[in-house]
Amino acid sequence: MDKMVVLITGGSSGIGRAVGNYLKAKGYTVYGTTRDLKKNAAFSDFELLELDVRNTDSIQKALGLLLTKEEQLHVLINNAGVGITGSIEETPNEAIQNAFETNFTGPLNMMKAALPIMRKQGKGRIINITSIAGKMGLPYRGIYSASKGALDLATEAIRLETMNFGIHISTLAPGDFATNIAAGRFHVPVTSTSPYKTPYEQTLQMINEDVDTAGDPVKVAKKIHNILKSHSPKVHYKVGSFMQKFSTVLKNILPGKVYENLLRNHYKL
Image (cartoon, rainbow, N blue to C red; front, side, top):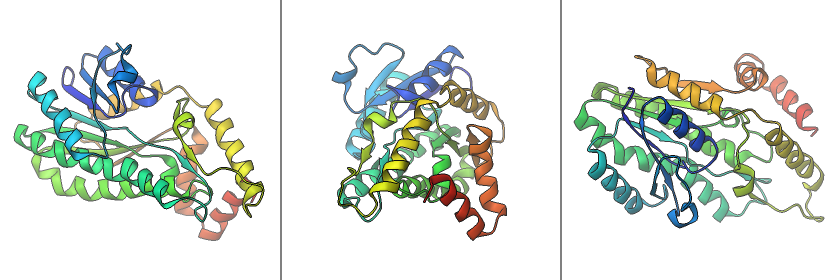
């Protein structure tokens, strides 16, 4: 797939930027997306297209521009996402809706737009960036877990539906990596009157510490490159520390209550 055309949503920073730079260095023709080109006027790593995954008109406009420039689209990496924290009870419905529109419906919108292009070509690759947090319902990250978990399941279905078209669709679930996701994360404010105040405060601190000490997102880029080189890619991949990846194995083999107690102990609930 070297020298093929790649489109990465959310490509102006974090994992998306790291992936774009890595693939560009490997000879791919890389385009990224951002919701606001004006805010990224100084960006020069690779070309950015203005695109909001929540808006189908925006998607069609960006893909039309891409096809005008390149005539083909071989790889779509659905990376754009938004973080969200808070107890489910106290999280506003508007914030829940935005998280799902960005993390779940957005990638579906992108696939709906890209599939006709790839089907006409007779080939294509799609990688949906999910999360290890989407493999389990994490306290105070339940909405984020649910949105990424939903994308995991939808990918399994659409992969089967499109396999006969020569299109390979996979997910890649990263653990914690050093990105700016915390800066753009929606979080329910910690209030003195909240019944969740103490455990939520502790969890927020733990999340932020994990991001501060997280790994280099280039590891995600290398994993994506390996997936793209595979002639028969799997449906699900993970990248992260040993314990982050092993936590998903434990969930599959341990009794439900035992695993739940491990989470309670980890988060000091």
